[in-house]
Image (cartoon, rainbow, N blue to C red; front, side, top):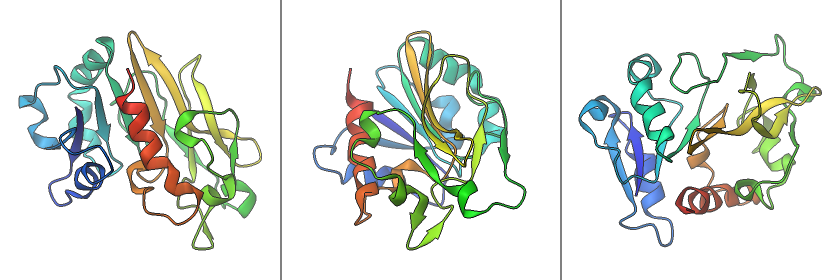
Length: 198
């Protein structure tokens, strides 16, 4: 079962995931402010979207770290401004970004991004910067999948926390990439496959 934190005004991510082929009954939405009462036991993955209340969740970072220690997977998107996830530093952005600063570069292969063209991440409807425009300092040993800008700074990376795994995307929610008519539409089904894999 995948638990998707919702922001109280938008049930979109949980509903979008549940509508994907084969996912009925495998997705549960949970209002982020009910997180203290939720049981993460038996959950395979936790999805934290970019609009979640990071200040609130930072007070529950120990619960998230414990979930990871016991083998859970966390998929988080956004700009990491509060210490929700272990090991991630703050974010930085180019002061006056050019197209080169917003260009996405694949650095290594990973099942979530198989067959996804970097140009389809760089541009959305002809505009650059929607997929991501900042970078973060990942923990030592993290696998950096996609970099941004000429220096290919870390945008998407994966790292282990004890028995668990964090997949971090420093931009708009990865769960929003399921309906695109370009190769980025592959992200959501492949992300679900990755979260469900043992």
